[in-house]
Amino acid sequence: MRTILVSAVISISLLVLIASVRSVEPAAAVTQMRVPDGGIQPQAVVDERGSVHVIYFRGEPAHGDIFYVRSTGGVGGFSRPIPVNDQPGSAIATGTVRGAQIALGRDGRVHVAWNGSGTALPKATSGVGPLLYTRINDLRTAFEPARNLVQEAYGLDGGSAVAADRLGHVYVVWHAPGAGEQGEGNRRVWVARSSDAGESFEKETPASDRSTGACGCCALGAFADARGALHVLYRTAFETMHRDMHLLVSHDFGARFSSTRVDRWTVGACVMSTQAFAEGPSGVLTAWETEGQVYFGRIHPTTGQVSDVTGAPGADRTRKHPVLAVGADGDVLFAWTEGTAWNRGGSAAWQIFDSHGRPTGPIGRGDHGVPVWGLVAASARPNGGFAVVY
Image (cartoon, rainbow, N blue to C red; front, side, top):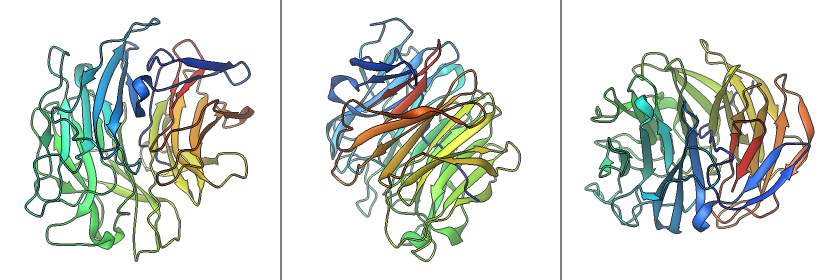
């Protein structure tokens, strides 16, 4: 049975990322936008008041910077971009899967985590770089100095993730070998937990079983739902060939996890995939890639099983980097990239599904290309319809 993970479920409002609005498709009610300032890899979340919080990458892919803007609604109503990383050039975009991730926690505080670049500090004794975390300050005017959260499980490769809930729990999640271990088969998912809104973090603990391994150059996704449950979607590397999707769910704030296999993929290669999550009237959705196709499904709130699995329509098998957005009426926008690969851009595509999972209208196509190392972001617009940005 296929299961879904939407790790990165990127929620971007029509009024967020005000680069230029390119077109509106009346049938699909989708507005296209470009990332501002020539940036790439936008990630966005919307708070309870409808404000949109956005981060994006700009600069050299191997050592660039992250910026944050906020919109309170209204054309042009965006804040001045605020640098997220205090060490210049300490973020990385190369490979697409390693970009910064954003979450909103208690009192609408913004939390950001990212893989440190080759110039980022501090280094481990082995020379491996850090996993950096920061949060916006109390005045919402700047970000605190970034902190490295790895105490033992060094060996970052694929992307990390951050999740937060309304109660003040913050989770930073990554995969790496245990101390003294090497190889994908020895990689595990690790979670650093905070119960004081990111003021302090406990030492990382393993969340996945040792037997599954983890795909070294694949991202993982993390999401805390409205009930406080923590979801983590990652790709395994069991016996090298088994690159299956597994969903971890915790109902006790990251202390213990149940595990469910969502999808199977037998391939002896690192596939550099990403995941996404989104929450709507019918619950939590997640999305992933298998064999060049992208899927999304619904996570059962108690069992963690994924059902109602739906693939993107059409025969193209170069699809990657799925994202989700859910409208107030339960309609779902499912978006992805086509043709993207290592050091190669591609195109954006999407499909709207009604609340019963039926496609409405034809596949939407982007008017412009997705840049190298780029992603597609999606959001439900406050007054109906959806937006995609890339």
